[in-house]
Image (cartoon, rainbow, N blue to C red):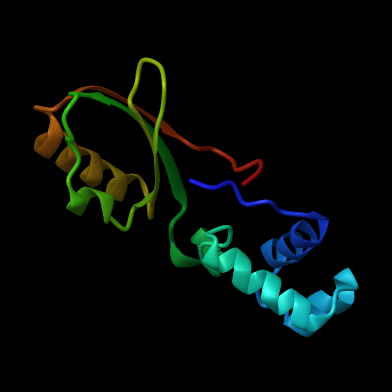
Length: 145
């Protein structure tokens, strides 16, 4: 794996794209004082090198009725115990392998407690043989994302 070298111009372009990925190349050029053709080439290079993985939209979960954020710690067997269906669940936002007493940290979002309860019951029924313990925590307020 090669380490991509980013200079201050690359970082300036990335900072602007991170704040608003819809900015035009011309606008990025004006804000960074870099020629638009150079901005375009830098963006293409960073996409090719995998620095930029994708351009996306950030949605407001509450506007979609996803008002409940849950974090779940999971400890399980050494084998892969969560299948592709679980990984593709619309309620799962992130899954991280972690160090310590637990193996995974999962961030989930639900419409309400009833939807979460249904999810957790099905989760326990399906995966209880491979999972030794879980802890679930309900988020009360988002301070930073």
